[in-house]
Image 1 (cartoon, rainbow, N blue to C red):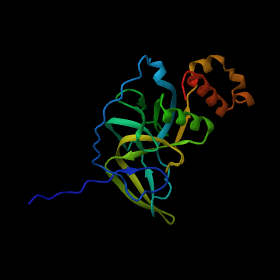
Image 2: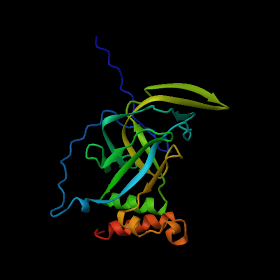
Image 3: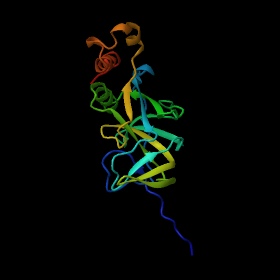
Image 4: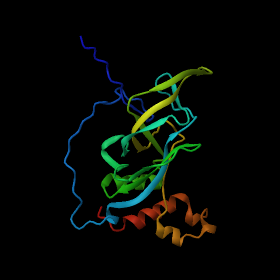
Length: 224
């Protein structure tokens, strides 16, 4: 008799604990969309974001009676990794296979990424929300759940310390489970050339205004 072992559920790390963790056997067949006629490589990208979807040695928000801590060097990555908006696979912001998502080397904070934002409705929306400061964090999905971990109790809090997990997507979203994650817009080359470093913290060059300026520079050619 063949014994069928149930597959581990996908675990997505955003603040709200969903009733279902998702389909670990996801298979979707869709036709690849062709670039618009006359499009150039530059026109397909409206700017670059950088952030930390994975951070070490900090506690997540409550996951339903326990919190999670990601131990240093615990993250592994699938061969194909996507950057999404709000864990939505219909809103792809970049992929490592197309080099529009770049996953950095682990450092003392966690694992940084860079995402080249696409010229799409949700790409432009993401740029504006990050620029305004409405969206400040990131998240990720564990493909196979907690592959290796150990439990501890800190005060009255149960903690699951994860020592190995595999990631196939990172997301930009408003309510990350790890509040220490981050996302920001990188200055454009035009902005770098015109900004006065002595005024970088002044009223005319606040962080949000710099990001909004980036949006204007990069989005002026787009049709909303």
